[in-house]
Amino acid sequence: MNIKTVSFDSVIIYFKQHISEEILDEVQSTYLSLQELEWIIDITPSYCSILITYDIYKYNHKSIKIAIQKQCSLGLTLANKKTNKLIKIKTNYKNNLDLKRVANHNNLMIDEVISFHKQTTYRVYAIGFMVGFAYLAKVNPKITTPRLDSPRAKIPKGSVGIADNQTAIYPEDSAGGWNIIGHTNFDEFDGFCVGDRVIFV
Image (cartoon, rainbow, N blue to C red; front, side, top):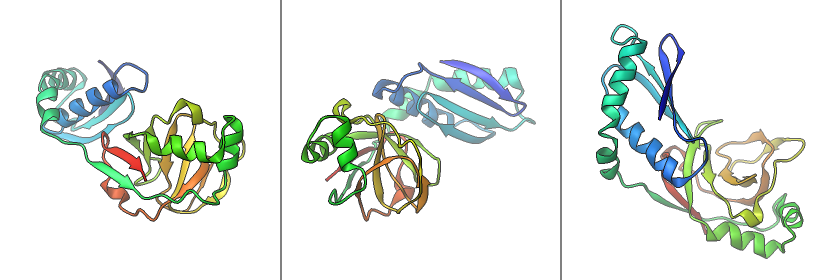
């Protein structure tokens, strides 16, 4: 864990820079621990980092780092008190935009793409670029597929997509460059939390 100053009122904690469940668990335990720290304005977890904005009238650059290091020693205990949700998402894979593209890219049949996508239990690693857009990883290496060369102007709400080794659901109509392989009527996007487990059925 490495703490770096970002601006006059924020620091960022860096963990090992790769996507893994072990790093995710470390990020989550630290995030939970920091929620107990006083005079913190905002905490934003991501794949391998946590951005912290703090009250400049209570901390300076040196004291916030000391407070974070002290608080992080409680992280594992707090994480053990939280049970990540398992969210099952009913998904229709018929007649979707990019199933054939994903199959061709990976030399698979369409049914194999669907099967590999459903077999994995995904973790929520981050939430952004819009409210409720949960980045889920990792997809089976046999169906990893790069983003589209040219993003579409409109992807319908509920579209299930793949981009490289991640999958996600569009919580609203939006422009986007992910490979659309399914659709869901799931609408509880505000319930996603970093660390949750997700399966498509």
